[in-house]
Image (cartoon, rainbow, N blue to C red; front, side, top):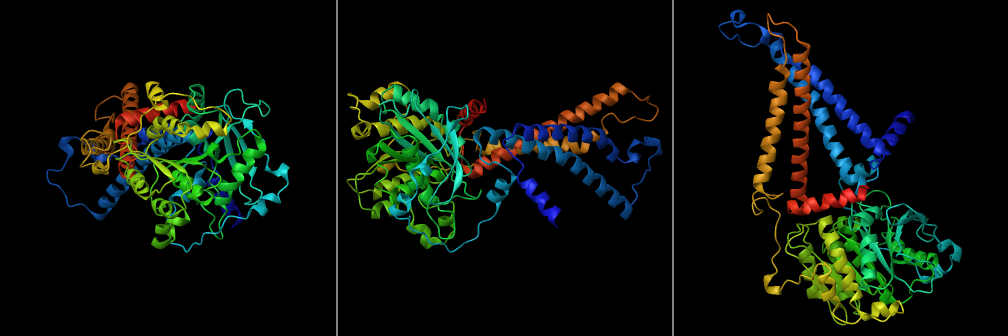
Length: 540
């Protein structure tokens, strides 16, 4: 029993971002393809080689043995072809996962795919200030090291929550703790699945931050991206009784750690913003509601209104409705908090609808800026393109510069930013607010989610698999009276290798198109190409 458990644990710990893992899967895909190419002809019955003169003029009724043999042959073909096809699909997933770090190991995949049943959850309050004040000052400091992508990383343990997870920071050029400057802070929360690195690479945050500072759109600022992956499953945004205290981690411990580690950050509320993407966007707003004294601004990029992940999403409709962003925004005591809410209208998760609901619910002196472009889906392309817009919006309030001890620049900030390529705000008039759809029926026929694209992909995949399964096994077989030809045999094997790989690639592409259509991530080939370029930069 013990060795069995050990084997399972070892399997779950296989890293999915390692080049070694990718290399192993690649080698296995090639080897299994070669094996299939060599062995497929053995699944062809010997009777097919008989000359026409030897064949019976009448078809005999198949016997049970004949049927079973046929089933065995086609089962063998299916296994021979299916294994390399699956490995190619896995290889594609690993190549996509590596730069963005969606999942770390096989265990994370198992947890991500595990069905969530309804549970009864209770939100636990954040600890009182005395709990944090009792912690020795030195405990709040973290030791960061450079990881080579423009960010620094530390694995730090929250002294009150007990959560031990990686944290990334992005520092502006020339930062020193004793440089006499005051720095603002932006805390960013990743989506699910994801981790802090996905925010570093996916939105090119080091480059975007420095560009915004150099252009005078924001004052010198520090970015901090904590991990929310307490157990590999869907993250909670608040403290849930009996669960790791994620609310304590994001709302109190991370800001206090940043203040202790980087002592020249501002203490003024206007100089602190919390933002997130997707599930992290919901968590950002939900966290800001709990600690209004901490954050003066909130960036919500492609959130849903009702909680869609974690315990809040699986504890019944009552708790879910109580924790809707628009509902809580309408009930909170307004105190001047600023909100930037981004949501593409063709985002199937309802991000634009969430933005409009929050816009309807906000009460002065709180303020909310809606940014709902017509297209963009639920994608890294959207977030990468609009992160500079978020930074520009943040710095458009003079109080943000004042928090850093700097006078706000004069002139039209947005005019200067858009002239430099920053996406302008896309506020949709209320009478034009119509949520789009990624339905293949409604999409352009040959866009990425179009019905034509799906049909072509499916037909091409089935056609390629048909060639592999029914035609290619007969390639290169020696006919009666023919001399054995090494060249002919080798050519047949290479031909089968090619068609197997082509079929595997087509199946992988078809699976990807289907997953994208169901999730509504990318709504155009253009956005997908842009995201591929982001991934390529991230992988370097």
